[in-house]
Length: 468
Image 1 (spheres, rainbow, N blue to C red):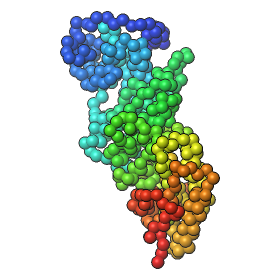
Image 2 (image 1 turned 135 degrees about the vertical axis):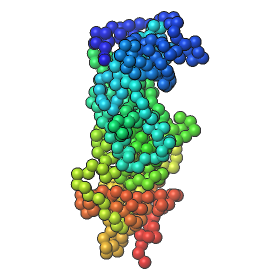
Image 3 (image 1 turned 60 degrees about the horizontal axis):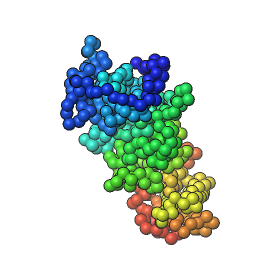
Image 4 (image 1 turned 180 degrees about the horizontal axis):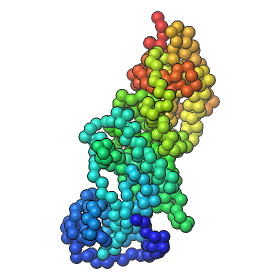
């Protein structure tokens, strides 16, 4: 249960003073780890039985209520942090934030307390299961329908957190525990230890302020790395990383050092999941939109993200329509910055945006389906009719005109090179010829198979595009 408001205020007043820890209680363990507590240590109404996990912020123990026999988990703040009012506040706010959300797929917090040595603890439900990262390592990558099933409750939990003004900020596979309920997987979202309270009560500050970098490098959004303001879209970026991770079995950005990974989050366009696993271009698009560098280019809400995921996988469609497979034209435009030293230059970034905006406008006006759109590339697809010679010729003419216009643009920067490639292959398209047409997959979306790796001069037309 949550502390009464007055007790919370009294606790906050105490935390504003310098804390002096009491001598360790005699029941504390005399072991190599000064934080370890012996079995039998009393924490409020609970008796600690064994250690379950230990991290940088706290240690979690299995415990049992002395009278009721209820088994629980008790999280205790680490000793070296307990002298910091800020860390104690953050520790208790984690429990308060979770208690505020009250969602079946978020661990329940029962009560708060303090050890005899002054360290705070809180009591939560004891969960048995396997975290999603471990399961991924053991099982291998998940199929798209499995991913939808796993992420649906996680997204529901995040929606509930965001509705209470709480951003998780450390969403990753290892923070999703897969329990079993009635013979089915029952995910639980864990570890709100660095959550951000966006709208604190009574004019209090949130858990952290701008300028503090918290999170995990593999899943950290660019604004977290820059220690800028975070909001719900920060979690949506992490959802994109988790989606990529589950579909491919690996992280989108990897490196020997955390700084290398963080730089990629800041500067490099995310790879397509289809480069590493057999997934559709529609799924690629969901990952890439969620992982946009600028928050306002991502999905605005978790609900919007999950609905796009469902649609991409073909789960939960009201229309029940499947795709139609046939030959189609694919026009791929990729913008490359050839000099890393000027990659963040405003003029270079403006030029990249201008190219992509121009391409998107021309594609839509000419009736192409925008099948893939990232921060540096765009793929347009147009179905071919049975008598496809005229449409192929029009596609080549369209591509040549577009490539020439891009080359002659006034905003052109020396470090920006644009590749334009045209190809014909099989594509699976839902509702072809209609305004809501969608590319679901097919060989055409496997871009790496037909787009040359080097820099192109003018329009590249693959041999398959031209009819003999």
